[in-house]
Length: 164
Picture (tube, rainbow, N blue to C red):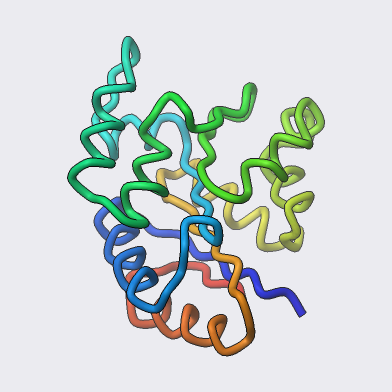
C-alpha cells in the first residue's frame, strides 16, 4: 500500500493553509512535493519573466517553514521546469520526474506522474487540474497513521481530487 497522498488546490492561499497544518503534525520538506503550471506559477507568485530570484527569496523569507520550502521552491529559479510540459516542480518528486527527462515530455505530464507512482486515472485528473491553474501537493507519509492524519487535513481544507 502506497503512503503517498495527493490533492490539488485551486489557490496559493489554500495550499499555504494545508502546508501550515501539515507542518504542525511533523511533515517535513523531504516528504512534500508541489507541481504547478508555469503560467499559474507566474500568476500565483507574481513572477516576471526576466527574473525569479528576488520573488523566491521574498516568499521563503516571509513564509518560512514548509510554505517557504515548497511553495517558495516553485517561485525560485531552482525549481525544476520540465521542457515541453510548461510545468514547474518542487520537492521530493523532482528526482522522479527528472529521471524521466525527454520521456516525460513525449508522454506528457500524465506519463511523468505515472512514472512517479500515480495511477493513470489520477495522473489524467491532475494534469487537467494543473493545466487549469491548480497546484498539486503530494505528500509521502511516514506510516499509515500519518497518512490518515494527512488525509483528514486534506478533507477539512480546500483540497480537490484527493487520492490516498
